[in-house]
Length: 138
Image 1 (spheres, rainbow, N blue to C red):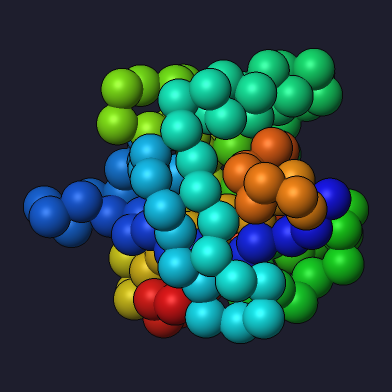
Image 2: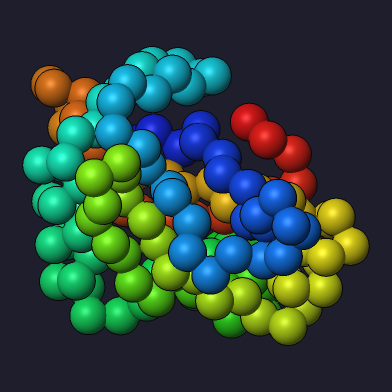
C-alpha cells in the first residue's frame, strides 16, 4: 500500500479549546501536496479503516513534527484512543500529553496530521498508519 500523509486538521475548536474528537478524514476527494497524488474516501473506506484500527487492539501514538522515531516514548505527543465513523467522515478521539497540551495552547502545535495507507490501484484510504502534531497547516 502507498502512503498519503498530507492532511492537517486543527486541534482546537473556534473557542480556542483543545478538542477531544477531531474529524481526521472527511468523505470525498483529497488533494495532497507531494508526489503521492490525490486520494479518496467514502463511508465504506472509513469503516475499513475503523475495523483495522480496532484490530490493532492498542492506541495509535501521535508523534511530533514528522521527526520522532516510532516508539520513542519521550517524543510521544499523545494517542488516538478511538475512531468513530459518522456520516460526514472519520473522527478520532485524541488524548495529548501535558507537554503537548502546553505546546498547543502556546501555539507551537496547531494541527493534527494523520497518515493513511492507500490501495495503490484505487487510491482509496485503507488504514490509519501514523499521526503527527504539527505547527502549520499543510
